[in-house]
Image (cartoon, rainbow, N blue to C red; front, side, top):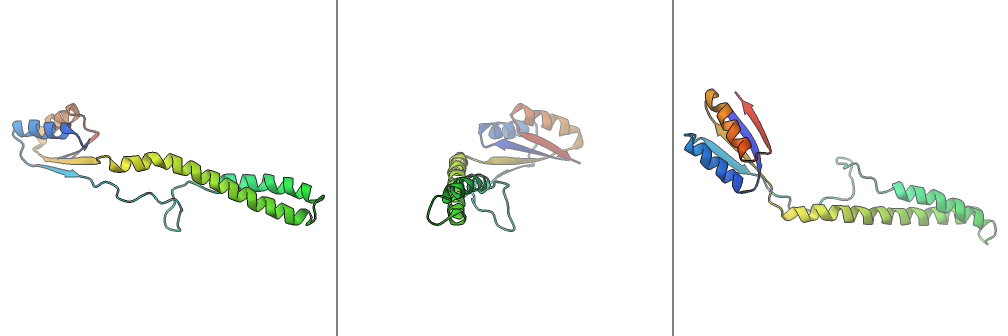
Length: 150
């Protein structure tokens, strides 16, 4: 039987391994996961999308600004069509910049996590009778998740 567990990178992993070794289990394999080395991408591609849209506020402000500037365009030299297009462009750019700033502030937290230690996967090979005991030891030492495969 194999028992898989994930831990935060902490001393509890070492304590769990030591406790399992004291119980006579020596077929233990610990694998630390790699940390993220690059910044998250802001713009989506055809092959990858994170579900975050940067044009929502831009479209909303484009409509509002185009209506306002088109109505004022009746009094101005270029007319309502040109002023409506100018207002739509200005509103879209303003909304896009607002969304971009908000996304940068939210992702600042993600960038701070870049230096954080990642998780550790612990694999324990044991007999079927020892599976329950191994699982209890792992839960006692604050495992994030445990799975058994027979």
